[in-house]
Length: 162
Image 1 (tube, rainbow, N blue to C red):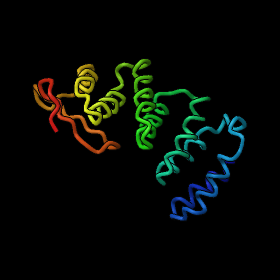
Image 2 (image 1 turned 90 degrees about the horizontal axis):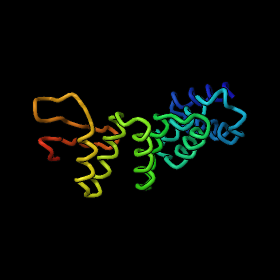
Image 3 (image 1 turned 135 degrees about the vertical axis):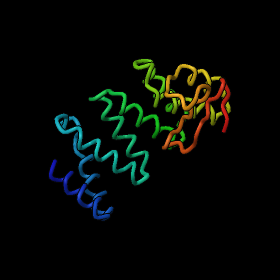
Image 4 (image 1 turned 180 degrees about the horizontal axis):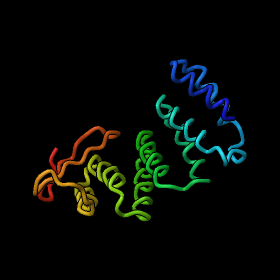
């Protein structure tokens, strides 16, 4: 399986996406429970599908990975992917789940506050940011930026400014 993953990675690097996709499709068609010792290959496949904007397939793989390796990074990735495919409630649930186990994880707070802002729910967005400790740019303001979401939030004296 590792050779197939290496082949897929090489094909991706030379931009032969048809062959890379075939190789990754082969990897995920195998019984995932047989490959617990090489979960990184599955994560590599999920990353590939996400790069190819096949978010449903990437999400499917990350969900399988969560069955065997429940960690914050996987939940963050799932939350971002849920949002990308339009499953906002699952994205909110994923970010809340992370924050239950690690209330100080700023990245999850920013993603969750961004969702609340997009839904017009400034109060909940502010509550999430109120709980966030970040380096202040000056005494009264902090800038939050999420690359995946693509916009800035300026948090200034408990007001969000775009």
